[in-house]
Length: 101
Picture (cartoon, rainbow, N blue to C red):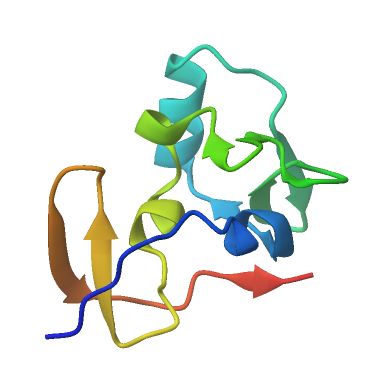
């Protein structure tokens, strides 16, 4: 079993379009945020600033507890992915959710 430890380099936050689903959108709204999405065709993404994800502050995520599923599942390019919820890391079969600019 491989181990993944995020070193908070924020490469993913700065360089990828982060696609979200309706549950992610609901969870972020329940955390008190509005106007954080952009639609591209039938897909919904988090808005970006010149620095990356709209919720990126330095090397931290403003919505860490409410962050989208794909952010919790990173690095999802691998067949086996470590789920990171800040406390427990578990292995599960993942999918490729990330889309480059």
